[in-house]
Length: 186
Image 1 (tube, rainbow, N blue to C red):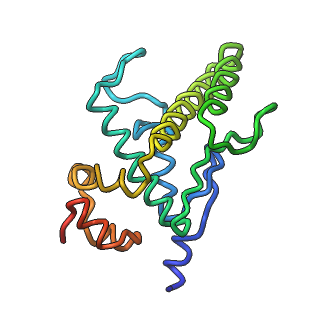
Image 2 (image 1 turned 90 degrees about the horizontal axis):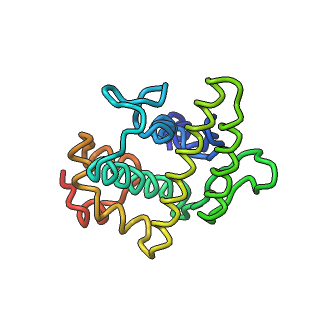
């Protein structure tokens, strides 16, 4: 493996949540913290309290499925399946229990309610939203669908919507068999 590829595949810690992801996935992973929105946590044209549509929720779920499978591949086929809670008093650093993630989100939400700075409150509320999304992703994994099956189910439509080609998936280590099953052709 070339030096550039080894560097790209080396695990790096996300500065937002502490989760370890490969270097070439770090930007994609960090975008999941805001669900692809701008750095201030809002989407253009959205009002406070906007409820995501079913299509938006499905798009986020597909992105999580693709990301989980790529993370699993990067970790040698063994998805960690855990959420980093960081240094949150009374909680483990990492957990794969969605109920613990929900409790942590509630604890952080309580801190946000008491924040004296709007910036601190904003960041805490974004962390709560991220944790709730990750808790749901853990619940989705618990339904018995493994990461590969989820990738196969949504891969072709997600790849088309995001302009991702067969060749790039192959570069990321996705087996040709999985791409074929997902309906992603050369």
